[in-house]
Length: 298
Image (cartoon, rainbow, N blue to C red; front, top):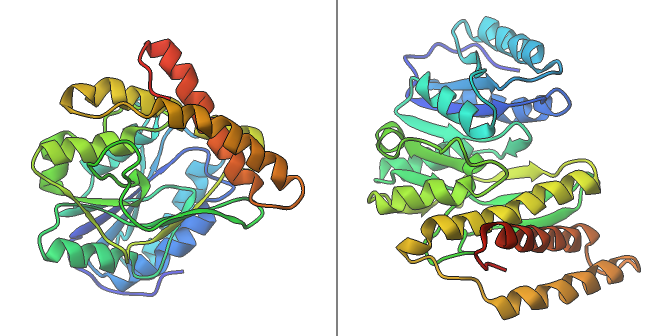
């Protein structure tokens, strides 16, 4: 997987949080291998977060193979057992990273060629916090969505995907890393918005692309995007005092019949069933959390 190569102390640290990753971590590692190989001052940190499957053993086997081949500790396996959640693992990895530049992707993503180079080039001209584009792919191989620009879904302050991001060590420490209480979405926007208010505007890096693979069943995908909908309301509760606007109630109500119609048409082979299903999940999550928070954000 990795070619032999001598390197100096790592300047770039790639951090991958892992939880019950046995079924898909090979795809993630296969995409990362040539990236780490192409950068002799990069390290890969695989952070297991209380997995109950074979993830721990698979990560160690991959690290052992890579490190034997390269003759150095190119890949390290860590265990973040003090809490649960992707941000627990990200922060733990960052705490043990040697690099001046921290890059994050997830265990169910595949970085595309040139990923590290793109982030490094942006950092070289002054970027402190960065994000890149991504495509979401369904289990049957359909591209459900493609995001080729910064996120502006909730506000005019851009944000990116936490699993396709980069930040300087100094910037990460200045904002306190990822907030570990964020679960099920919203952590991405929170991370980039806190950096923005700390004087570090996000830089979008078109060449740093990843593919995100959606979960296997409709039920699991619905739960995932239901959580994203809930997180939008939580973001509003957190940032409305700093100017985050309320969502359009009219648009939110109109989204229900539109998505329902798309779902119906998909039964006849028109449009994407996955896309309609995800839109309904997000709206359901927003409605549920608006009721729970007593803050209207539909």
